[in-house]
Image 1 (cartoon, rainbow, N blue to C red):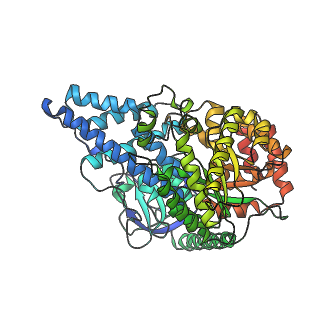
Image 2 (tube, helix red, strand yellow):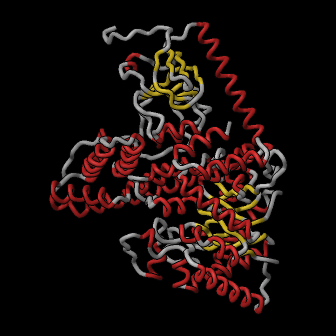
Image 3 (cartoon, one colour):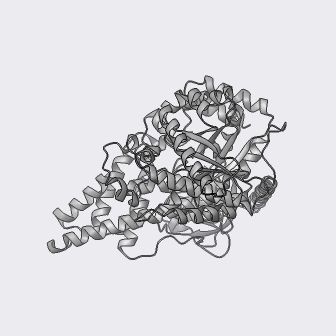
Length: 601
């Protein structure tokens, strides 16, 4: 063997990526996601520049739409943390610097659109790889993955194939690399394990493998790709980071037994979690915590009901406004809300609460229809600009129309309607919003429109100003809902739309945790329930700790509901309360992470 590599029964030490043991036939695959390396530096004629630039822009726009659709699918089927991977890729493709560099290559050096994007992407990817921060450097893979999607569109190649698998029978994938786009479509029924040359535990492909519960290792010697062949029996240990290229009979028996045991445990855990589909969430000693769902369309409302949501804790009403040149009128909104309410309530016995957030537009949530109302917005810092409730207060009729539609739909369906307003900063805003709501409700009553018995009004705590003023705000409303993602962004001065720093959102910072605790105390003082919606609530290690702080309601994507309920029930309330208090004393993110890990034992 010219390579000098020898196959033996002794395991090879590699990198542990995703836990679990897998044994099965090899399936050699070529990762289809990254096509940037296959693009030649083709050129165009000077007269083709404008057409080529337009072609590139169109492909970028289409790729962003594909990624938006994919992120929503992943949020429903896997979870919000994994969906954020593809949201970050959208931001990468919308980076003005990337577009400027690529368009300049087209206009000045007459590169073709694919060649220009490849070079611009590689320039940024190499800058990321040169960073000392491991997580940020790993984002180069995501950038190339996102650019490959655009290049496939430019080349008229087919894109993602949902539920695609490398073979009909279960196999162990062996590849040089797998991108996030490759990994997310894998099935644990078709793929027993993953073995790659490159990669690490912090890559997004690794995160997806763990979420999909597929054992994985990395660090394979690239020469093995030429020496291994399809259907050759190998094994991996994703717990210890071991590769068995020629397991002997005794090893095969032991590894097979271990794999079957973990499959049995996985099935048992899944079955155990399934019991929570029809049970309300409680701690081990019976303390109630409502577990609701975040939904953004009728399909996700149905998924929420099937997963065991006790209500909808965040109805993203933006689903009615996205991708439209003009906003829907009141009747269209009414019909859509009614259909969504019915899709949820007819499928669940657990509750009929609907917490609808009024249109949260602006910043990272642009809507084409808004331009007809407020003009084209080119803000230097959109996260601090015209967004959320600020748009409503400038254009009151937009809010009135939405309130009328929601109240009418709730009156017909009989749901317990809660309405909450996003991006609150001051007490004056809340008082004005209450007056607008009261005016709308009175108008409908005078018109003899059927209304819900009682509609509760709440606000989202997303800014440090609102968190600091939580006590006076709590006096004015019926409930508080903490938008953890934005609260993190504004507290830590970390732009969640900036792909260079999105990796920071994986941590729980002491400042954010203390602000959440402060809001909970304000709610307790005035007898107002406090909710948390977003990725923190969806984490089975963190959700119970939020309950321990005194949070009444956890709202999350449907896939997380049963695991959070099960985790919450593992200990009595006092246990979670003690650990949550310890977190308020922590001074670093590392301390908090250690406490979270220990509390889940």
